Image 1: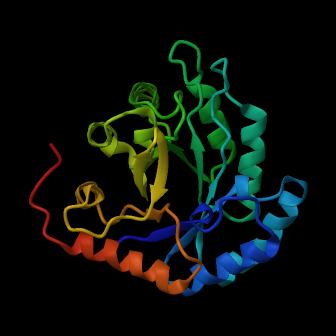
Image 2: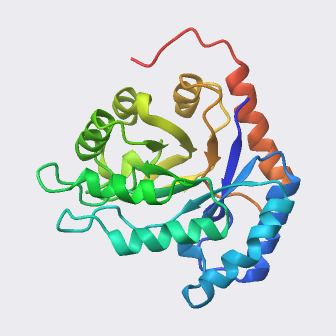
Length: 261
């Protein structure tokens, strides 16, 4: 069965206090979840390093594997690597012993963006693996630039994998099933959510439990060894987390005789 991770933004939509953070870690640690996704945008900048250093032993004691997520694009608006910002992010990962860092693509330009500069950065931080996510932006949420990036990185045998967010494709009017077929070889981390559109606005809501729900098809078509994340609004309770973990685990246990067409 899959490891399940709980992102902090499933609990919180605004900046949080240390008390809130510790409560979230405690709840996730007591649940059936295997790990937690620490979201940089929810932590207060002025004492960020102190917070990360303080929670590291708490995460370790709770036996939670950690993903560190930061809304810092790999490539800036001119197509060059965000080197200094990324160095900072990787150093922050080390503060909490994060195994993976999840970042958006940014403005990747095949003719300008130097993959060797990114590879050098990764070699400087061998303890942290990079996961590139399809986000909700034009530059990082469209199939074409992401496909170009992963294809070129793969040719160089770069150690880069994908966080595939099944709901984010809707924000750029991309077909999630088409994207799934293209990116399936690169997927390492699977963000589960359900997105609905109302009055031209998109909202993330909990996974529908119906057996015919769209998320189930993709979930059944990837290996159970790939970690999943519950990235949708959750009550801050162990029972709520466990309820959805059970739904996902039972979905993987169902016989899957069909592929996505």
